[in-house]
Image 1: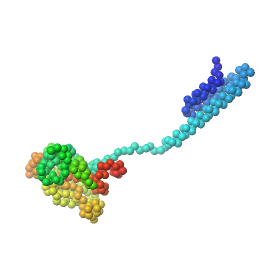
Image 2 (image 1 turned 60 degrees about the vertical axis):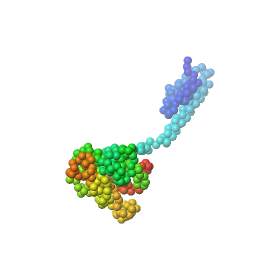
Image 3 (image 1 turned 135 degrees about the vertical axis):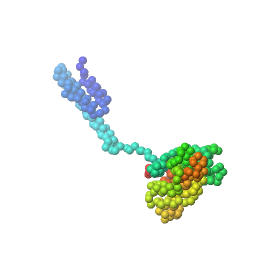
Image 4 (image 1 turned 90 degrees about the vertical axis):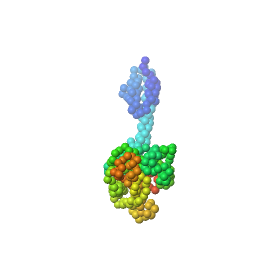
Length: 335
Ligand code: PHE
């Protein structure tokens, strides 16, 4: 049985309902209205029909042809508008959204910078534990129990004989125990003190230095630290060695640098003195050689220790140490 024109209409409209793009709508136009399309063929067949049916069938078939044609044209326009709308919202010529990349924390950066300078001078990098025994943190460093020198560092005790290390100096002892002369090491790491204000946090970072051989003098200490300061800051930054006291060095000196802000004129940062203290240092106390079993009377060397936060504050003009640990992305992004 031949397909009736009503069936063709129903089929065409249903096919159009399933269509969702211009290409499909155009294909349907060919399938139904093209030269060999279903409607066209039907119209051609009308001449074979009985004469009394021809006029009515011809009119109905032409109406249906127009209905399908209008529906297809409407659909093509709808699909085209939708496609343009999509293109208006997605501008494919825009650059992609950048994926935010992390960066190193300023303390990591400055620690690396400090270490790089000493590595270039021939020092090795070593590390020690954050949780330390009373022996390594104090006793072996010539700080006996109940000695007033313990007051210099307010300590977190884990138990009677275990502490959070208050400085990186215990790594001096651990290194000398393991390694025969000569040694030239730096030891970066976290240290802990019961302290908290604008310039102190309970955890901070130090870099320790130790160089021991047989003929090392205070002149070597001055030379190495002068080179360090000139590379870390600049050649114009002069140093002064101020006599001081540490139980594990003798003689001891604190190193001040000419104020990086006012170049010695006196300002708020240097409390009007023109100088900034940046590290502690001295010639290794003979008691330490005895504690680690180094040849008595023949070993000589120097040690120094500096706070990374403090160096970074001076280098970048940061006035509040707590900024390092608040993790405000606006602060951290600047490095
Ligand atoms: N450990 C000392 C401190 O934390 C610094 C220091 C290290 C001083 C080595 C002298 C020699 O204050």
